[in-house]
Length: 381
Length: 139
Ligand code: SF4
Ligand code: SF4
Ligand code: FES
Image (cartoon, rainbow over all chains, first blue to last red; front, side, top):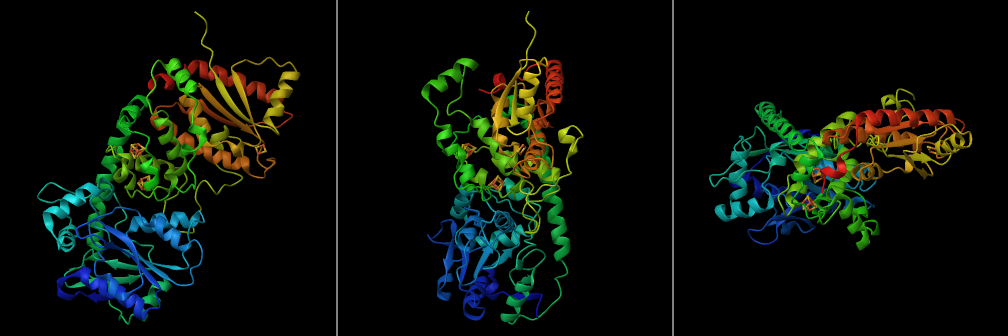
């Protein structure tokens, strides 16, 4: 059985080589379908597509620096009931971590999916990706990659990966079944595959890979990247804490919010089937608005903006994986991710929890003990 | 000038603290009139958004009070409530709320005196703290 393997890259093109690997999953490894990002429209953003025909990986490009959607919700759709076949899902680390959160909420299942995680050098926001493609043409994924895994993610025209990616301390998808490693590897000549689980090991064996040692430079490449990301993250926490330190500041921070709720639609771990903010509860009588306005003298419309964000923070910050899709989806460029990650860091720390770490950790708001947190009830428990 | 009288929203469990409040009333224990009781079937029903809404709309403090651990009629609603209060105590102070504006207690049905005392001391504490400015601070 192979735990670690080296996959040779053909024509110096890791994307083309992965396409061959995906085809082999269908032909040689009893995989029913592969979920992988594909360019459906030339030059467009690659979107997740479910592929069953080995000939249809022509435009698959999971290495493109684009991240239009956190596919955790899609994997949840594909796995919440048995489909009778195994789906291999090619995902970024934050998609896997979000999926693990959904599994814990019984909105997905690990058994029928095989998670192929890719080392993630980061991705551009939607609008920046469009500009990036305009300036770079078709080989842009490979060019971006080779520079990005060496730490250079910014481009000459001043574009850079999203703040969420710059602050992400999980570039390696540790909890995938198979990890497609690029850090510390020359991706124009080979990719490093290794198994994170026994199922991953089985897959590598079915594909006839032989065992190798971990590439020498990998560990140091990961450590170096983490250092940079954690430094960025901590600066971001500090800045955001300062910018939202009281309600007046928070109001200013969220002043451009139009209550479109795109951030919660895009959020992979906002798991409610029906969000209370979209129900009749918030269908207030006209006279009610006037009463509120009269009491304060002035009422922002649409109303309940602060209420919405604070409630979402209370409901899901313990599950936030920091993927940044909330910021990506915001039409008004509000730094939503920065706010949510900053608060999530506190709420997750308070419960000794880390979202997405393991399917065995209990979500903090579903588990509870008879004796705990006695400070909350004035020392009595 | 009239002395500042805080408003406290109290989410109380029907089976215990509500009964205790009733007992405090019928026993004619003197109680400040600052508390607005909201009877819940269990503290496990108090969604964080009720607390957030109360504080944003200008309540000076929120009290959540239910059955002692082991006594909850729905087995563990009170323990879930305690985690939610813990959560809110992490979040709200980051936006300038004083942590003392949110309190949780266990008060059983026969503990009328305890209820009266909890409310009395809470009113004193919040009076010293001054009014919650949230309503004025957000538009
Ligand atoms: S709140 Fe934002 S960063 Fe956190 S998981 Fe949801 S979309 Fe991702
Ligand atoms: S996406 Fe942006 S504008 Fe829309 S609700 Fe979220 S923060 Fe507000
Ligand atoms: S029934 Fe009283 S707290 Fe649950």
